[in-house]
Amino acid sequence: MTAIQNNQFKSLFASGLLSFKEPPKPIHQFKSKIKVTDEQVQEILNFRKAGEPYYTIGRRFGMHHYTVEEICKQHGLVTQSRTRTKAEVEKTKAEVAKIVAQRKKQKKAAK
Image 1 (cartoon, one colour):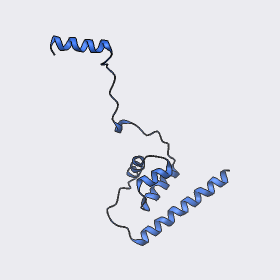
Image 2 (tube, one colour):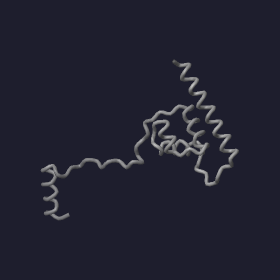
Image 3 (spheres, rainbow, N blue to C red):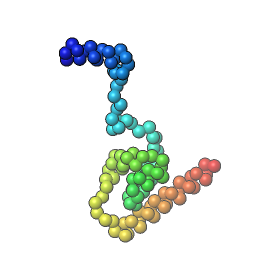
Image 4 (cartoon, one colour):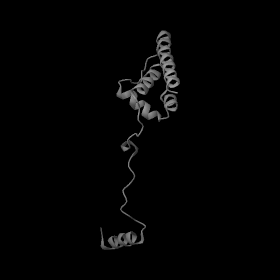
């Protein structure tokens, strides 16, 4: 850096046009502040097994679809590239319906 460039930087700092503020953190460094119960995790996994997209599950639970995807990855549920049989889909839907019914009962009992 030459003396002229150094003087230019000094004048920019003095005028406030340039500062030493930290640049914003990249998105991947932010931590999720959402608290998810074990029951909610199970429901998320069951919905995903039933073929629900991450986006739909995220809307249902009030979280970003990337958060849903991360929860699924942490529990060993990766996106499957094969098509499920009709019997597998029906079985999973029945499991999900059972969990949703239990959740509704618990909410009514809590009131």
